[in-house]
Length: 235
Length: 235
DNA sequence: CGGCAGTTTGATGTTACTCAATTTAAGTGG
DNA sequence: CCACTTAAATTGAGTAACATCAAACTGCCG
Image (cartoon, rainbow over all chains, first blue to last red; front, side):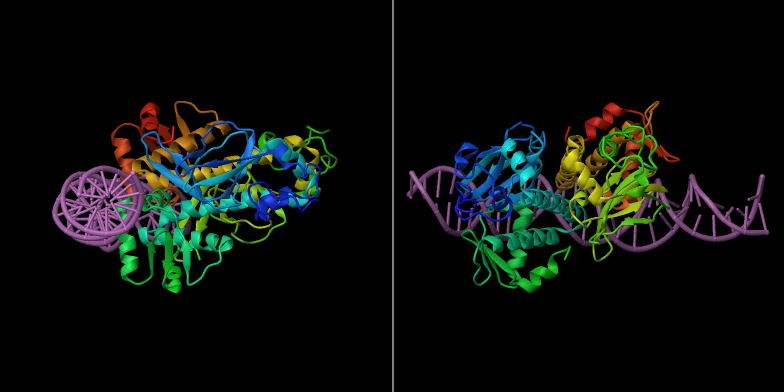
């Protein structure tokens, strides 16, 4: 009963935060009472900075990203979200999001009642631990992003982003011949590492010319992983 | 008894995390049993990345900073720490620090037993809430730093940092005539916003020439706060 | 076939970096 | 209190990295 009730909308998603959430606790038989699932089309808004919400959102399928937007239109992508990711770990205790989130592909999102999560976290040590892990990962990743953007060249930044994504994608997908599903446009990469799309294109051109990697039809093809890892900072 | 026992070493520090930590709970009469206080001289190491520690550190007096260091010597300062700041909010639940920390001035640091904090947090809602606030602030500040460094010019970055520090300094000090205690060297500013010290000096020269601000003898003198706020992004 | 979004390429401009010298400030010991 | 030493800040000249602007190219879909 406690493990037979999957997270609605995330049929294969019983690890990490969602896995811990469905520990032994009354209410698992009827998750619909405290979980709502909804789709968002590609490019659609999932959450908005400073908008209060009673729900904690988790990405079930597809890709999304979190970002901060400036008054003049510039935006910084803070994180790409993959299935199983909590949209904003701090939203578990805080009522508002400090960043906005958009769907990159078509996605399914689960919204869990914050009150229910809080109630469960007092009873489930594994959930508390999962939440702590989320906080830790969020802070570490944001710190590394800040460090790479403050200190690194365009090539290093892009290598860092790709290596980071590759590791995360590999958790969710069976990877053959170093081919990774990769729905990002160069504009997204530019917004994530603080470059212009034009310069991103140039760097990709160089990497392709050196036989390190190429992107085509939504697939990132890493021809020389060793070389790519050489380029990335923060080993 | 519950409020008469101040955080050892932080005589006036009963707000925020430390304040919540000393809520009604047995053991307040003898904080020395689970709190150790120690000084660190200016420039000294307080914590090191990936080194496990049973203590959660809190800055009592002086200035410090957190940073990430690259293999080749480059470093990114992530945050400047003021009295009352938890060195690393994630260290409350995790055993290791993901960033290192150094003293900027001579400082006093308190180390609280993590186990004691955990025990208290189950009994003290105010402490749980204070911890959540720390997590939230850490993530938001790191995200804003990443965004500013990805998207903003040198002038905007420096204005952002100064405005951020000004707000924080004002919480701890009585400010007269817009004069703020300011122990940073230009090298620190450079490492914090991803510029070279030479360029920081040039930007400061321009700001000084425009009559916006000046720094002398450890004091930041803001002559035109309105203009400075115009320069800063992320209002 | 035409239109559109995304990518690539070229030419040029700007910002910030590098290197090096100079000035200023801050200590230190006589 | 003053020479001496050292760290920090400033200034100048030259350069590299990335941005900007604009045009051409590609693949895709109606």
